[in-house]
Image (cartoon, rainbow, N blue to C red; front, side, top):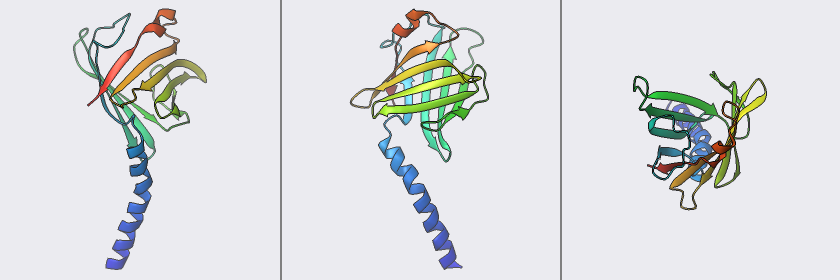
Length: 159
């Protein structure tokens, strides 16, 4: 029985090693806080604070975004976006039914939201050379097609 238990534990460790190795190589993973002072936000919707957590899961990854605003009832809003690098993952909505994250190099990735097969938003996410700062820039957003949106920069710092 002990031999069987050791084999099961050993097999589980071997299966989890690629996930752990990938996590160590992925500089985007972690907890990120918005630095409004360093950001350029043309149409600020009243964001008081914003945190993004990017973590690996057995199916790929999870982006958890927590936003606290100065408007409304002041409650924090939390969104969960499951993802797998390089492919679209179904989403519960609202505003999108599929989401993809793909990397072009070790410091650049893109987030793409789709609704009924059409791109409704695309963001470029750039990581600083030291890996301590992440900058988001909308390339397109169907709900706000104003070209000024492309000048906005949301700067996050790794915690």
